[in-house]
Length: 630
Image 1 (tube, rainbow, N blue to C red):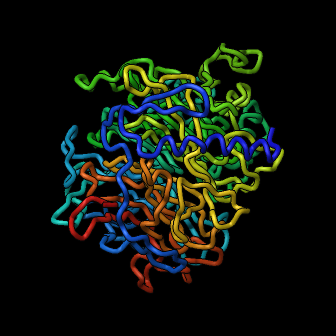
Image 2: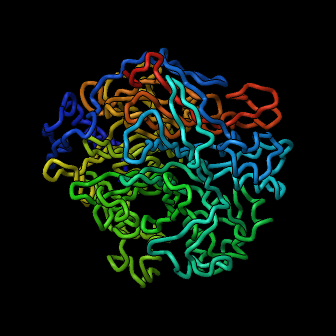
Image 3: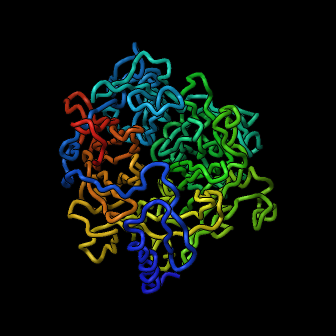
């Protein structure tokens, strides 16, 4: 599996349908991969064929951001900014944990715009939900030489800086502001009490001395991407939680499970936490790591609500949890496990979404079926059920119940023969067509003998995007289906360099090709917007945001819209319903080798000698008030 000629032939076959897709409108029928046919679903929004008319922004390697001509990028909120009136101002290097709990967190990632009032389509007033993935001690604290030597007070700041922020915002003219006196503004951090639900709740492997019931956990952290539900809640994904736990990982009954989740006992960034807080020491609380790596549901409209870890969606290094309403009212949630050679997952609710009865949707995420993806060379992709008792998921292989299956979702997926992917990050369904886009950032460690149909390049430094096409039932996408079609939407890299193996829908400009795709979003026209994470490593220029049609003549032709400051990545693109504002996260500016609190490689966005670089959320608008992208 993986000889170069065979893989090259697969790529050509998976891309050969592109001509048939160009210019297709809703209701048309097209053949896929030489197998079954599928029809484009009636548009719930734009079908993604509208051209993009902005003038492309150039490449950049400097310390500030750049946006296409005719647009303004407003800094809406920065790490450390107070989230409510009367909260303390940011004191770089001298914060306390209590102060940080009242301030916008660090390393902002996923962004969700939730209109106000609930259920409306307001594009001028809403709630902004923002994830906080990491805390960079070298950039945020003065004099740090070793992450192992952080003080208790510094660890408390780090714990308060991660998780999630909810802010009420409003637009006045063409400018946005945070409503500081809103009762909706709040922080959810590593110190917030969270309920555990679903098949793993209360299981012995989830119990600890501090929580003998196994149903309550303190905190969420390393919150990367996420999603929103049809009933108006936010899903935040816990990603690389292995970086937080110290101890002897090789001892005790959890040793094998820890190894599969890369828990070495030598945490990469947060080794000091275990010195002050027993729950991060596996020798003292061996089950604590099992309580992280989940999807957490937050109701942004109820500031008194308790977040919930929904264990039915499985435990992984979750990058996202995005929803798609299926033909029969059930809801599918797509997730990527963002590690090299890991998998793509889908969860389908057992019960149907009921828009007329909000209370009926409260626990939809506790009952349903979790699946993992296998991509076949013939253009089919199979969703394999991760269900206790089915196939190899039995007591003979160490799975005593569904709780064991979801706690060890990776091992369960191994046994089912899922397809190892090149770091699956965002997975998003296009609202009008129902096609699902799987973003593979890169995998420079894949060897030639490890190639498979869906990951066809060894030493894949540039990443690619796969398109899954579910079948239609009465003209509507069936996101519950276990057999779909798939193909490549694009393969990143420079098409002018044959060694990259890049493929796009047509000619791209010198500034239009991309590397390391990460987060994606769809604007109201249905076009895809692709944020990158790693272009500086693999392409030599700062991370950027690109737009592209997903159908019509421009399908798969990417155009550069925005470039970020050096050392940063771009995260969480999110549009208002009218498409006139794009919220964008700039995460960890200045995070480069040798960059420190005292001498950062950039001081974006303040550019003041007494301020370190700060992760921030931007509100991008068109100067003439029109829709983003044209």
